[in-house]
Image 1 (cartoon, rainbow, N blue to C red):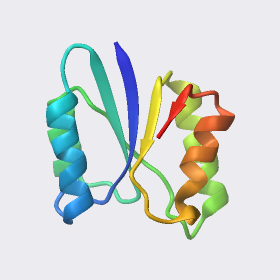
Image 2 (cartoon, rainbow, N blue to C red):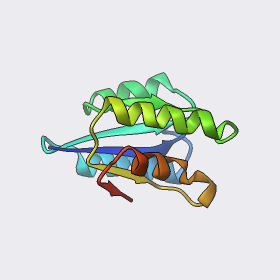
Image 3 (cartoon, helix red, strand yellow):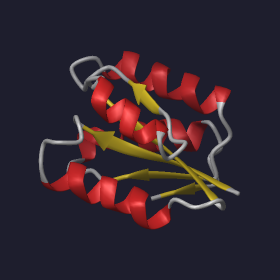
Length: 110
């Protein structure tokens, strides 16, 4: 089974990227994939939807707190073994997740 961590979902209802990531979950979820998600604001409805797929939703600090965000992501990586970290981001400032994944030896970072 492949374990994939995907970032970032806002609340699952916010628009394009959120919908794309949820479509990704629908397409990729099966007995061979465990897909978890990151968010900067916990939404209980979204968390419940993801749990129906066996996915976890982890809350991380926003980019206003980059050091706290980095530490939280390292904590998530240290408590879970992921094969892939996939970040659908548009600016290099959001590269904190990729850096944390590399530091924590996630073999594939997208």
